[in-house]
Image (cartoon, rainbow, N blue to C red; front, side):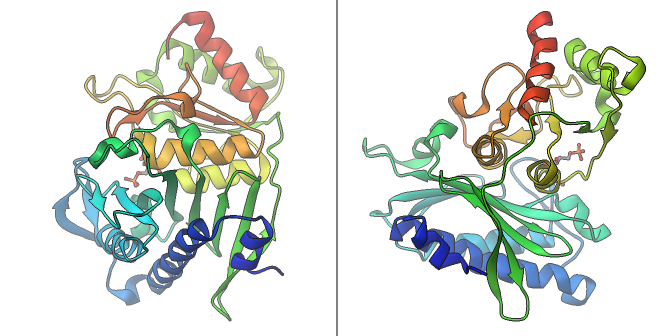
Length: 326
Ligand code: AFP
């Protein structure tokens, strides 16, 4: 089986970007080790702190963030990093060609129940227009040069794209190497599986409520077929399933918090996942527009997400277009 670096060289990925990916995989192995030690590692549970999102930080959130921040900033090709767990950006090497935005431990509320979590990363080119600070990261998702995730499950998998399709690598624990286990991932256009947090149904827009009601109506309803539902409450795990067998994943607009109607973050959750989904032939929208076309205005801004099997996303969009809302 092909190892990570030779595979990247075969894809003619530039050496600076290979160095960034290599840095990320080193972190992935360390985080994987700590997670798979579980209670024995003494790093489960929560800290007494909150991040900028106002969320209580898990010990592993902090540890994973520190690991990624420290090792990425040692890489001379990294100009700066942005993280879900950092209020602002952190500058790296002035001459670095790449910016890295990441969610160090996505789905961290699953840690204490030994369920799936992940690390999500997005790599953007350092702008050449002289801008600095957070503005460097305010680029549309279409500007990404690489995006991916590590999913820590029964096996640890590194899944990413550099624009030449989606590849999946599995960590061989015996030798500590990521080996290529799937390539050229293609998402089926049609699906009978959807992922959404149903407990929010009464807070969704009328369009989303109508769309999901018709899914639940199954064969006897307007869709004329039955649907299955999954919700792992870790975007990485739900998106990994969509990449593996198709499906629709949604975290749409909802009215619970009028000042914060969206949950998922654009820069280091929605954009990198959208990049992968599109590379695999799927679609990724906010419910109104292509996610990767959104012009960011803040490094921690949030968006609605509807992504997955192209034809199913289109069908969901039709409900929104008909009603004119998210
Ligand atoms: P945490 O990292 O706080 O667990 O949130 C995970 C997440 O951002 C995303 O990975 C999940 O899809 C979504 O939130 C789950 O949200 P709910 O807990 O509202 O279902």
